Image 1 (tube, helix red, strand yellow):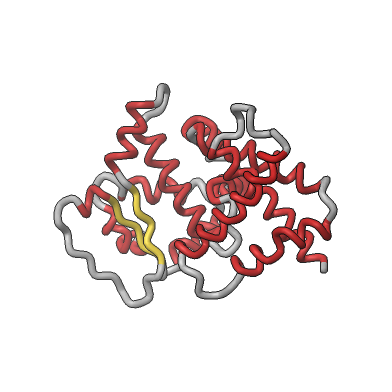
Image 2 (tube, rainbow, N blue to C red):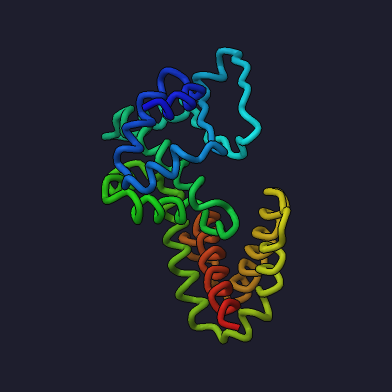
Length: 227
C-alpha cells in the first residue's frame, strides 16, 4: 500500500508490523489511520542511527516506540514473543492517538478499552499477556474509584472535585499542567483516606491510587454532564 510508505520513518525493525497491526482493525479504523496525515511513527531503532527527520507541516502527533525497551520487556516476561511485544506496542500507542488526551484520566485503561472495542477481539489476548502489573493495578483502582464515587452524594462530589474537572477541561493546557491537576486530586483522595485509616492495606500503592483517582473523576465528569 502506497500510503504505508510515509511510515518508513519508524525504521526497518518496526515497519513490517505496521501493516500487520492495521489489518487486525476494522476497515473503518484502518482507513482512518492511513488517511490521517497528522500522525507519524518513529522508533529508537531509527533515531539511534543519528537520523535527521523532516516531517510535513501537517504532522501533529508522533507515535514513538522504544525498540530496546520493547525487546527488554520480551526478555523479562515469560511467554512473550518479540512479535507479540511489537504488535501490542504499536496497537496500544495507536489507541492513545485515537483516544486523544482531552478525557484521558485513565490513560492506560482508556487505550486498552479502545483496543478491545475496535480491535475486533484481535488484541484481547495480547492485552492480557503483555499488559504489565502496574496498569492492571491501576485498572483495579479505577473500578474501586468508580464504585466509591457512586456512593458519594453527587453535590459533595462536585463540591470537592468539580473545580479540578473545570481546570482539566480548559483549552491549551500542557501535559505538565494536566499532571499537576491530577496530582492535586490524588493528594485530596490520599489525605481523605488517610484520615479514615484506609491506607494500611497493601493495595493502596501508587498505581492503585492513580486508578482510584481516575475512577472518581470519571464519576465527577458524569455528574457534571447531567447538570
